[in-house]
Length: 424
Ligand SMILES: O=C(O)C(=O)C[C@]1(C(=O)O)C=C[C@@H](O)C=C1
Figure 1 (cartoon, rainbow, N blue to C red):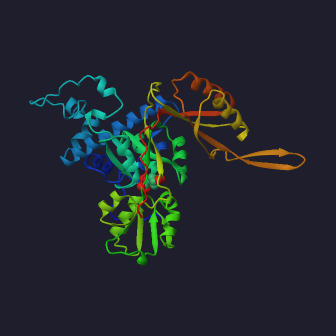
Figure 2: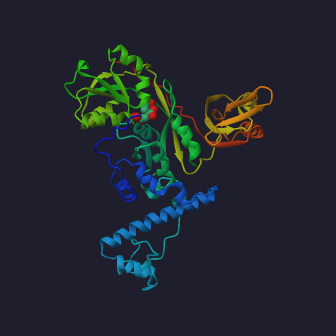
Figure 3: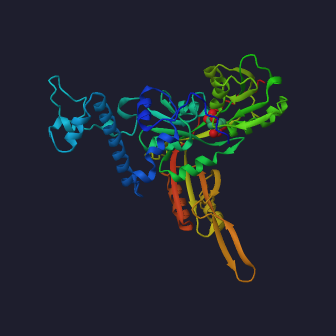
């Protein structure tokens, strides 16, 4: 996939990230997130390890910010001296947050934690911060808004950065696409779900209504290429051909980023496939509206958090799992029968290469060596982990598999269906 970097989006370092999260939606980049590579913050295998790593990170962030504000006030030497054991006054060590000073500059004792401090989100009364991949105007931003109305949406330049933003407490949630009704699965996010330790806490299904966007005054005959996210290009493939647009199609990181790129570079030979909101944001014209090949085009997004939600039985729930087996795919039928036997419907099954052990060799002295590809299986089923039948099904699945992880048990998106109508 080609990466067209729009001139407006700079790669940020961690200090910038921390500041811009308060200022507004500058895109988080992988460069900033890699400042805390998993290996360097030593995430252990247990949740306790992971949580304490996050706490250490969060305290590092605070002390970095305090150090930089001390620098600005010419306080570096004092700070270093106090850390080295001179000037051991409490205020030098800043054991009490700076804001907690009485009028006479005496530190107040720390405030006790309350129940609301412990609730997972929103943090400290502020808006919920939701990471998504893309720039403003992307469908993922709309999905974040549907999942968490009034949230502060935080643009990230890659899916991986959105995962890390939540892990590093820069964001409270991530909203990421996993499948589209026309384009199929977004494999990258399936792989990332396994590599990261976040939990699926919800899903949203967003009707995706694509537009063909170009600079004002540009006509179809001028176009030599159409750029967009690969999913968007595949969702509009036939319609583009029907419109007579047999021009080059180029994949970029996100739909709104494509619109931004056309506008920022004043490209009169290039159109972007993106939302009507992207047209407004980047000053483009809508040349054709509703160009997705199916009017009921819909993308399913999952909401991710550091903590799982407590599963319930008072409304429809879905559960997502991933499993593998040492003996390969032969176990699949047994696993699926554990659900069929209990009348639990599967809504999705996806297989991905088993990255740690992609090939299994089976030697047969007479005929040679068979090389089987190994897979991880992702299954979504319609039941809550609070239901006994789901617990029993998983207990059985565990017997057949060498690896099983519950990615989340969460309420199904049951919002009324409103497909968009084609108007091109
Ligand atoms: O590029 C965007 O606007 C996105 O939000 C990404 C994405 C995707 O990854 O599938 C989301 C929804 C649409 O299906 C097209 C693209």
